[in-house]
Image (cartoon, rainbow, N blue to C red; front, side):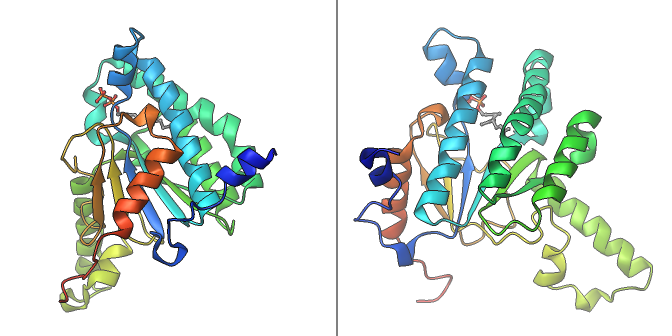
Length: 249
Ligand code: FPP
């Protein structure tokens, strides 16, 4: 490692380590537009999006952010052209195959959040194996929201809880936030402190609807493949200027 790269890996001096978000969630938007602007097919944008995601994970690791969640594929994304859906499914497999060893070396704990049963069975196998193999790793929690939809997640939690009530395992008045959270795809992962959305859209797009109740939101016009360390720095600077009151005064 050169002195220059070593310097890049250190938290920029204007950021206060004690006020860093513990968990950052990202809506990785703009891959298609990034490709279009370069006269490339959309899939090249997704490929470059993976590079940006790897860089974001590295930045979190270097700067002491302990969890990163990325919106990789929403329940609505199945409506894209079949060719693009197929490409994304095979991209997830290729990336998992290529990066898993490195993530294990870096102690990353990887989790996939979403309705995983609808994914191709070969991908499911890889996902469950990766989650099992990394579940006790002490490093960064990396959650990939795949076939994820916030409303679907809440409905599926409701169904599971209702079924417990039907079976007499739980009383209705015992349902509280803790019980509910145990039935979400994100069980075991803290709520995000900061949500970053790239490419300028001011929408939540069905992402982590329950979990972002008190999350700070940062939107940048930068397209996801261009979201680099400097962009991350800007998002964190903005976050550190916020006054988080959680409903208090
Ligand atoms: C949104 O951009 C992006 C996606 C639907 C895919 C995001 C996927 C990645 C970043 C890769 C993640 C990979 C792994 C293995 C975790 P868009 O296509 O909606 O862009 P547009 O709004 O410009 O059309």
